[in-house]
Structure formats: structure tokens, C-alpha cells
Picture 1 (cartoon, rainbow, N blue to C red):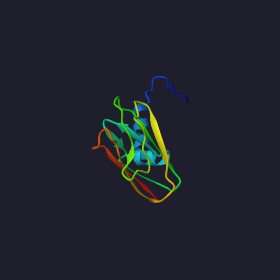
Picture 2 (picture 1 turned 60 degrees about the vertical axis):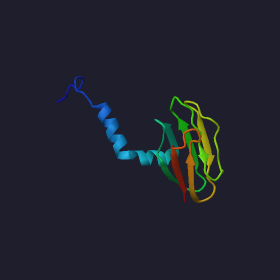
Picture 3 (picture 1 turned 90 degrees about the vertical axis):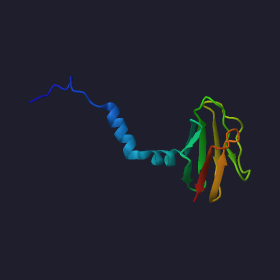
Length: 112
């Protein structure tokens, strides 16, 4: 017995949503060590990485942003839309950062 599956609809959008839900945004961020800058926010706002990891911030906003550590360890230049900035964390600790243009934008990197 053969079935004709040509007219059967497969919910591709739903399966992608389920895949995302199973992986979860924290897992995605942890695997890629990427922080997205969008809607005047860092996402995720907090990220935990191992010593030696490189974290990348990518600006998806139409406005420029910066990534500045409050202790002066790292500082990006102005990041226009689709620009990125990366920094390698060689020592354990908690590293806070802001956008110096929009100081209400804050985030934290925890290095273990």
C-alpha cells in the first residue's frame, strides 16, 4: 500500500519553532557566544562563558552602538548596523559592559 503525500502539508514554520524551543535561546547564545544588539538592548543581557572564550557583539539596530567595559578592559568603536566587535576573555571574573552612546543599555559576561 502506497500513500500519496503530495498534498500533505508539513508545518515547517512550526517545526522550526519547536526546534528553537527545544534548543532555547540560552543554548544558542552559549554555543556561539554572540550577543545581539537590537531594539536598544543587548540580548542576552548576561552570558556565561569558559576562560579563553571569545564573545562577539553584533549590532542589528539602525543606530550606532558601542561595547565598553566599566573597568576599561575592552572598548569597541562605534558599531553601525551589521558591524561586529569581538573580545577574548582570558581570565575568570564578572565583566560588565554598556553602550557608551546609550548608557541604559547594560550587560554582563561571567567567565568561569
